[in-house]
Length: 393
Image (cartoon, rainbow, N blue to C red; front, side, top):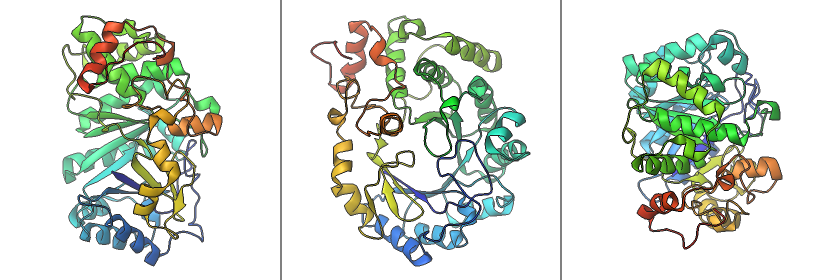
């Protein structure tokens, strides 16, 4: 289980797609120091091993008591990670200190392979170079677990192969590709079509065959389905064209092979699309700066507040959360999909488009495809969920 805590709304960046709609100064109703300590105590109310705590923002370093809170969390036996913004506040000395006090990992955002792309998205010139420098410092000098987050959108989608090359050369441990959600500052003109998201998912499957960098998606759970179907297709001697890929996929694959060489044959380096089939509200919970609790940071559907009820009680007893964990409660095609146990669609995207967290995910192309029943049966067989029929997939 992962607990994402928006420690503050304050941040010196002005990102175009910022979920938090971050501002320059902390808001007055931010959790106080004592309330923040109490939240950390609430995490220890869960069974061991405790949920991982990811301290995010805004920018965690804009919170004056960050170091005390991080050390307190670690002292309680909570595996603690941080997601700082790349600003002058993030120095090499502070990164070393994070490792020294026991923070087990860090995530940084890299939203393009060119300075003009990344800096335009982040709103501050010079951030791209600094991000690349810190990425290399974290891996080559400090040796800390590092995840690079990339929010895929219209302005950077063609640079995904180049971003992948940058992070694999640096030895990055994980690449988390965020499928854009229209919340916060994110606007519709930045969004991709369902065909393009499908192509990106197939590209990520190809990328997973290189090196040791683990590839995951946020708010793109159908990547897991693509991953499984592509694996089966390869076992049957079939290629990605059987999954309805389009022109974007072939452009991304061509660039990937230019940079990395031919896509390796055989199974991917990672055995499956990792994530343990978590989704918004299911293995993931988000605590906002003021204690409000949401299924995820991208789903503004309040289910409680830690000032009023403990996080454990909210997570285990909220009627909305209990309902959101059962994909059979989702509207078709997500609710009737044979793969909903591993995917379920993005609840945040359903809410962003339809104001309904139980709606379908409009970015998934699977319902439009006519798949070979043999492929479906083989894809589902390891899970003991082979369907009686292959209609309404």
